[in-house]
Image 1 (cartoon, rainbow, N blue to C red):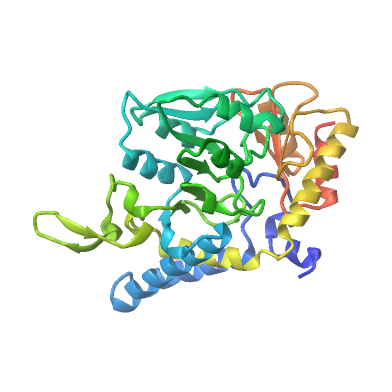
Image 2 (cartoon, rainbow, N blue to C red):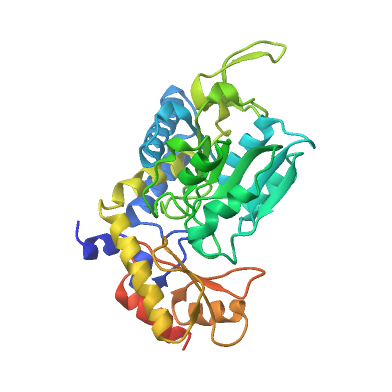
Length: 361
């Protein structure tokens, strides 16, 4: 597949310099067609019968296998989720931590991780990585670990600064259970999740899938309590509510996921080219360099992932993002920061980057 062919799959790129995959990725034509076909079947044929139910199960199986391949882990260790947040809640509910326990996180985490941490019952210790160079992240996180630390919960790619945290090195340095928020990594950079104990996935971002869909890798399903069972958790059920859980991580599956959305996600995963990571890294670096040359204060260090964070020349970030959108450039103003964020994927062109700079000049 050529670059031009890859771009042609996304109708929005015909009009918009779409630099917002860190929030919601662009939807490919094939994704929309698969969703429309699924919804049309629901409308015309109804949502009933063994054929319908078996198709739903087959789609769930297919999504599980594809997410496992992206994470380089066995499918039986992957649960289906509705989001990164729901995956984090599964883990923190199942760990059953209390006031005598501590969780180490960073000062750069998304609410999708922070809010589950806040209600975990444990004391939260914050490692200050935002103002430190990316190369110091492992040491800063390790310094926050104490005798009561029961979990490290961090992002692989920080949603604000775009910093890549070497999560496997964190695991090696601490030896502690590790929960990784993979919202900004899966689909943007190569991932091998096997070193982590838990790794979450957002499917609507860099995987360009429908929402709300996600995933959760669990290294040892038998070692995590099942705090919030769903219909898909049980192998067999008794009249008093006692049940035998499904084998592997499937017991942690979220409830019903829309059949058209599952079909759309599989279609989305099919359109990504083999060279997506290399191209994404190259265009993100090109975007960063272009912004520096144009005089913007860029927060993202060289050599990170697909996110490029910088300060507008004038005005508030929200006003700058609105100005860019009016010029046909989709970016994100980051709340409670002075920054705006451009998300560069394999579909991003040099012209998209030029339009970004021109829109904010």
